[in-house]
Structure formats: structure tokens, C-alpha cells
Image (cartoon, rainbow, N blue to C red):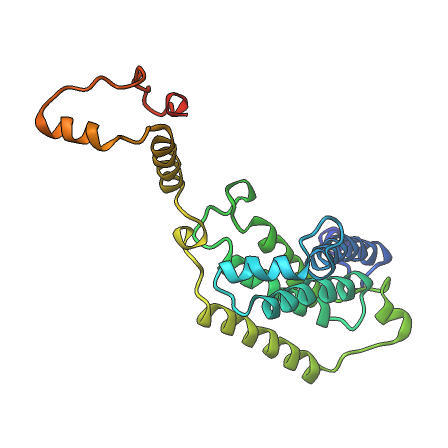
Length: 239
């Protein structure tokens, strides 16, 4: 019995150890730093990001209008949430803030696709959201600014922040349902068909009025150039 109790104590110590807090700090810094980078891409265009204007245009194509406002909210959610999470500052406001961008991305961008990121699915936002929830429950640990500065966020403030983020998620997803693939971009088949038709029109010479009258009278007219039938899907003969 003592051996069993000792094993359970090693697996789940009654008091948090420095090693456990070091593990929490590692997760905080990695996830928080990456999310802050994502937010900086949206807000400032750093790290090769699109910046606020292009992000706003993209969000408008998804049905989130006005795009600039939603781009600012998404960027702040990722940037501020990532910084606070990584530093372990004002916990759990950081992990709560990042939920807004992650949940909206899951619904508006990745909904209806396979979960894997290689299929355009919600694998990454689900991972970030889960990490944030885990850190919100576990706390920042001793290797954090909250522990160093003695900062403690009251529970009413935490509840108010969670309610505000939840309200934003509901508003984003109720007023702006996810855009379908047809609404996001023209069909590739339509684009291909239009291109082929344009090439055919540009390659066909204009017929004179005399040629039209001869055609109507039943006379055969040889084309001014040899026409070679194109293979299916091959448009080179039309160019």
C-alpha cells in the first residue's frame, strides 16, 4: 500500500514541483510566442504577414464585415493573448483572449473540412485552443510574471473576460455564417471554361459580310487557315 501511495505521489505530487512549473513555462512560451507572432502578422505585417488591410479584405471575403474591424479584433486576440500567455502575466486573461480568434477561425475558415491541417482543417486552432484551456485551468506556475510580481486576477474579472470573449464568438458566428467555397472564389471549372472561350474568340478571324451571304446561300467556303482539332483539355491549338 505504501508503494502504491508513493507511486501516485510521484506521478501526481500534492504540491507543484519546479519541474512541473518548468514544463508549464515551456508550453506557455512556445504557444504564446507563436500566437503573438500570428497576431503581429495580422496587425503590423511583420514576419511576412499580410497586415491589417489585407487581412481585413480576406475576412470580408469570408463574410466578416467590416473586415478591418474584425481583422483588428482577430489580431489583438492573438497578439495580446499570446504575449500575456507567454509571459504568464494577468493569468488567465491571456488564454481566455486567444479563444476568440481560435474559435472563430474554426467556425469561419475550417468548418466542414477534415480536421487535418493538410486538408485545410482546424487542426492548428484546435491545438492552440486546447493549450489555452489547459493553461487556464493549470495556472501560470512559479516561472511567470504573475508569480514574480504577486499579481492575482479576481474571479469576477476572469468571469467578465470569459463572457466578453464568448459573446464575441457568438456574434461573429451568428451574424456572419461561414462563406461557402463557391462564394469565396469562382469555380475553377468556370474560370477554365471562360479562358477557353476567350481564346477561341480571339483566335477566330472575323468573317466578312460576303462570307456570311455565301454561307446562307449554301456555298461552301474553305477556311483561310487549316483548323486542327484540339485534344480534350488541350487549348494550345486555340492560341
